[in-house]
Length: 357
Ligand code: F2R
Ligand code: MG
Ligand code: MG
Ligand code: MG
Image 1 (spheres, rainbow, N blue to C red):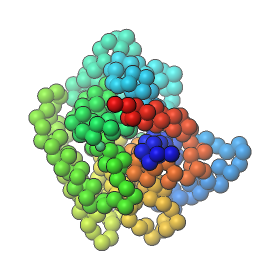
Image 2: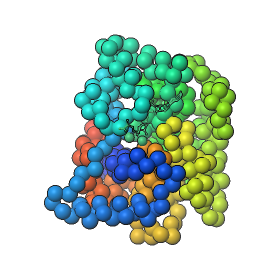
Image 3: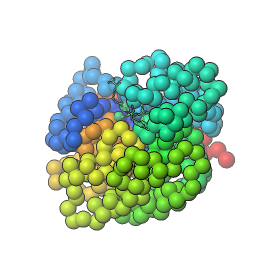
């Protein structure tokens, strides 16, 4: 298999296993989860996978929406807003119990009512016009990152990510979070296993500085909305600077420090940086996880941060899988997660498109 195809499959399968395994813990909304507890659940899964009638962990909304993004991009060979909106909405009405966010479901209803003609209107109207700042855009963005990989152009990537996200999420924090997640996946696709975490975070800071400094035409600006929300953090760049500081420390911060400073909740601003850090931090050693590879460490660490564990793990898994390739994802995990084979097919479809001129 070509390295690029392995990385495409790694990104999509990594996202699926992060979602399915992370979802075991999502409903706890814990501040942190002891890594031994996560490891125990994973060991049970690994033992279980040897049984013929082993259990299958269901995927949640994170994967359901990523599948729609992948299918729509592949079938249309590009972005078709109405088609993607219809897939999101129809999928939700077919399987409403996948654990969707509390408010995004009203966007699906309004999209259906408009017969997918007013594609961006319903999302814009959310939360009195400020749009959703949830991580629902970032959690599903991996197929868009794979689609724009061949262009090697952050500007093109940003445009597609903004379009795909804005069908449901128009708040700047949601869009910028999806852009950061997409840039991290793209860098991982372009990295070897021996990449430098310090250099990667510097490169992300450079890219996000450019994006965050741009004047915003639609919606409220990030600064305005944050003034209203009275949030402690101003920009994604500041969060990336915190990650840079962590990586330089001899001892990495505690889970609680990371949970508190970077966040691990349902907002994009308080979850995408945690996913990026989970990936970068797992390039280093963990005292208790010596026999686990960097992909496995990424997932275990991301879930241990607690909070929105399926979503932090799906985003971290996408980045790690894009870096280390599909062979880094244990077969036992792949066997136990719903939607892995489909993810491989979507990766092939996106890979074929990336090979066309
Ligand atoms: N929601 C969950 N998990 C809980 C499962 C509940 C489920 N009904 C069940 O028990 O079966 N997980 C999923 O939601 C996250 C992604 O959410 P998304 O797509 O961003 O949803 P939404 O509704 O747009 O936003 C989520 C909540 O964030 C708050 N919020 C967003 N923007 C806001 C704003 N501008 N002002 C105030 N609040 C805002 C609201 O509370 C929204 O309901 C992922 O974790 C996914 O796994
Ligand atoms: Mg979910
Ligand atoms: Mg590139
Ligand atoms: Mg979640």
